[in-house]
Amino acid sequence: MPAAAPSAALPADANPVDVLVVGGGINGCGIARDLAGRGWRVLLVEADDLAAHTSSSSTKLIHGGLRYLEYHEFGLVRKALQEREVLLKSAPHIMWPLRFVMPHDPAMRPAWLIRLGLFLYDHLARREVLPGSEGIDLRTHPAGAVLKPEFSRGFAYSDGWVDDARLVLLNALDAAQHGATVLTRTRCTRAQRDAQGWTATLQGRDGSVRGVRARALVNAAGPWAESFLRNSAQPAGAEVLATRSLRLVKGSHIVVRRSATPGWDHDCAYIFQNPDKRIIFAIPYEGEFTLIGTTDQEISGDPREARIGDDEVAYLCAQASRYLRARITPADVVWTYAGVRPLLDDAAGNPAAVTRDYVLEAHAGGAAPLLSVWGGKITTFRKLAEDAAGEIGRLLGQARKPWTEGAFLPGGDLRAWIGEPLRPDVDFERFVAAVHQRWPWLPTALGRRLARAYGTRIDRVLDGAQYPYELGAEVAPGLFEAELRYLRREEWACDAQDVLWRRSKLGLHYDDRQREDVARWAGWTQVPMDMEMDKDVNRNAFPAGGACS
Image (cartoon, rainbow, N blue to C red; front, side, top):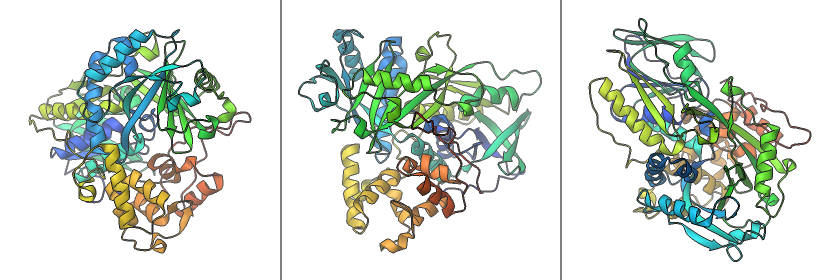
């Protein structure tokens, strides 16, 4: 069943929904999916594009959080470790195992402490897919070639990689396939509670205003969760809804070309320990690039205005250069992005030490319950959504069974193509081979990219094409009209930024003219990059979502 189009009509006031979910990031989309799969009537609204902010600006890891062990966050780490393989199995096209190498610097942490941490990491949760940790000799291991010669010893362990923006999108698709209505570019400007439920005012990007009735309200607005309660959600009587505070912590990343790190001819990522007791990752990215991040800087003001600072670029370059043979400089940086993590204020002085765990806060409100989501991280989104859907059921007086733990995300069930699953990364390669067998005329690189992005939904993208010319014009290298039509029809793509920076990362591979060609194809407006090219630093900030045409 196709996803609801971005222009889908709002439910009429006379036909209320059970749950209104505010926020189209990973938590909001995950909750909408879980609720819809339990049979609740769900409406999700997002003021911008799906994953327009925090949820497309992560380090893109499915991980337990090795460094959180130092802060004694054993419960969080165990919960995240339990979720890793659940997620990897649910969508092997957008998630896969990744091996990490940690060069040992005795000045940072003693080897025995690292071994202890990795032992806990290996054993806090059961592993079926990911191999355990090991010590390695960097003088002979392929990962040592890119490092300075003084790093002769290291450790290797496993976590997972995810296309974060597409993970959000797949949850929204699954919610829609289970009957939810998903509306992007639609802001909830007011939600008024009364004895029978909630009356919400929704405003479209074109200024149109509509009301909707809901039995329950979920506040999954991420960095705006606190301000939504204070400014938009109207309680009945003298009730106070905003009882918690968020700390907004900016995490910034830089991207350099793979050629800036000669000798990196393997698929491992690196985790580097820094003198400030933080860590950064250096990760293979988009084939031709390396992703380096992240920072932790507390901010105030509108999270939409968060941008990487020159000090953060310099910091990431300097810390990576402590380990890499080739020095990374700001001139090597070709792209940057910054996201704001909405972390629950736990009075930790150091932003890096603020808990990444989540809290679900319920206000029963008689017949009009409210559930607010505080904190969270991508790896635990499914468990958070499951807990939230269970709580909503309790508040509405009808418990309904959870269902997502063994479920596939759209495009992730490869069994009809490859037979019984073996291991997510192996299964994906078998799927790619099946794609090339079914469509032998597809260029190899294009077939792999489409398989990676869409999984078994690739047939919906190709839309019955039997010959190359049936894909339509090649609007930009490797991007044909058939795919653009699919993205607009089924994935809520409303402008070129949605296509180039969230539904894909093709914008990183294209030049300005090619990006403009994509925008021009449907009369879309190519929204300028948020940060102009610096004279001394070849980088762009993550582009914001633009308006639908």
